[in-house]
Image 1 (cartoon, helix red, strand yellow):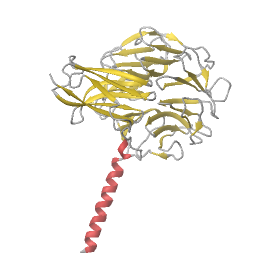
Image 2 (cartoon, rainbow, N blue to C red):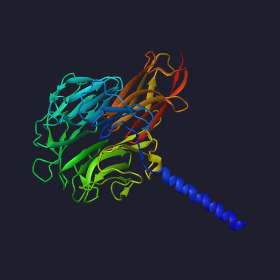
Image 3 (cartoon, helix red, strand yellow):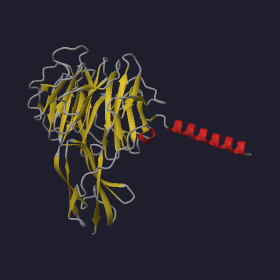
Image 4 (cartoon, rainbow, N blue to C red):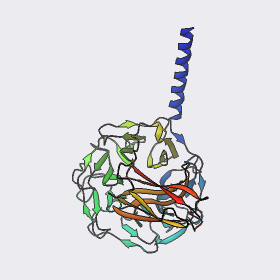
Length: 424
């Protein structure tokens, strides 16, 4: 009898282990596209994918289902997406040279689109710094707009490279990567610390200056490189000094950062893509590819509790909880780092907090069940004090009932919370 129960327990354990292994695999999402998914953006709980043949698609349920939202977009591949608050921007690349590329804007989650004043331009990449949208064009120009695309300015002083590939911002500084497959004097990473007025090379420590991807989180900046001694480089001081993070022999095609977790999409230079994870700044790497079948990864993103891959054969997702990631711990800063006034309130309240470093931030309001009722910000913020108005007189940000809610500020891998009380 004892042997029977031991066998039964062992069988149950093996079944649970097998079930967990099966559930930990990547799932292929059902994007309505036969071609590649090139890029992504997130607004609140909405996830957007830019594709090569069906414009922009939206998912409101963590990538389980996708719907095309492309009314007003021209029939060109969507090569870049970016969000500033509730404004969604799409960059299109016209490979047929018919003059249909450019930057498009949607203010209603992609339901309708309108072309900005930047017309007949092909877009390689986008980045957001505060309320400024930065783009890399097909003819290797840097352009930026601080008024949602109504007007654009060119930024090229000191930018000597003629092969721009990637752009990123930490909320204060802007970084541009170049992609010439050989080391020449005008390649590597260029940095602007003054809003694009001037640029300078920032290559100290880069032994491979062919850069395919860039990502910034606070003062940490990461650069994915061409095949060489390192597939990725890291800087902990806003690009002043770079250190190789390993993975020799790969191309670092895309990056995603969450706290101390760095995900790197790699390619072997032939036809095989993979996702690598480090939780200790490149000391060790591990593949997290179980069930992932894709030739080339164009972008990766963290949305909610999932990691998403945007590739030549659509969109894939995998729960972060089923990967060996370091948990994001709540901030240990002093109590009341967030303040609100008035609190309690009847119509609106001003939410204020101070960030020690620049970075990507989310400011939201949730009810006592953890359900989000308002999203006040999704995007990059600089260091310093920031204020946001939660106005319950408007329909878009109005909570359903009086009661106790919680303000959440997520920034640089930390979470701050503060109760707010509505009495009407």
